Image (cartoon, rainbow, N blue to C red; front, side):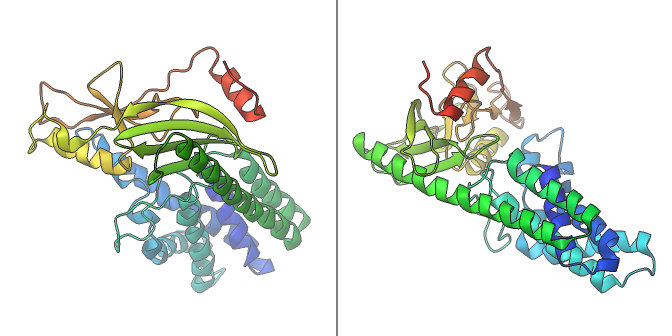
Length: 334
């Protein structure tokens, strides 16, 4: 989720459990504790561009790091609060606010190391997009109006609406998965490895990818409750297997980076049709039904001991938003 959503989520939970005379400090704790985990973006290296994506949503987003993160946040607020509030109260607000961050990130599609160090697997429930104005505004309005009116009831209403939106996202995803199973069966494919996620800003248009016989199939669905899903035909690409990469030595830095990028992308990687040195993450694309990835890595074939460069390729065409608008409305596209 974006920083604003995390901030208002942390503020909401902290205010809900706060005492009336401690609302100011609860608000500070909630905002600070809920945004601290994303400081992991500072873990970066000019020599190794993949370091950032490797450690974003990593140990700072683990449930086991929550007590430590809450400790850091509460002591920072304690420095400014002095003796105006007991530290254990600040820690309580910080703990529950910090807890909202990894759980909320796990609800999106990027992937979060929720159970590190027990496992290195990335948890991605993919029930809401990474950026979505509806839940963000719901909580933001609740916090502002609730503070002005001095009524927790408003916070409870906005938090309930927020949770209902998450539940709706889960219901929508389940319905799209059923549609994807029907589509794969009609193609004679077995749906063993697949990914279903909402596209940006809403939970109406969903991107689906699945792998069958080392081919990645991309499709999109428009889905609203109580109506049959509308399918948008996508494309397909051969799955890239770093194990079969012969252009760089198996003991090289580039080969090791390819292995890490494949893990990060959950095996949904393919070689660009227009640039054989570019390996893209097919889970994400500018348009939900397209195969062109939003990001990927480029191999320096002349120097395999150099780290791969991580590149964003978000080249919008003149009709990109028009196509997306039609998909949101559930109408056919050319």
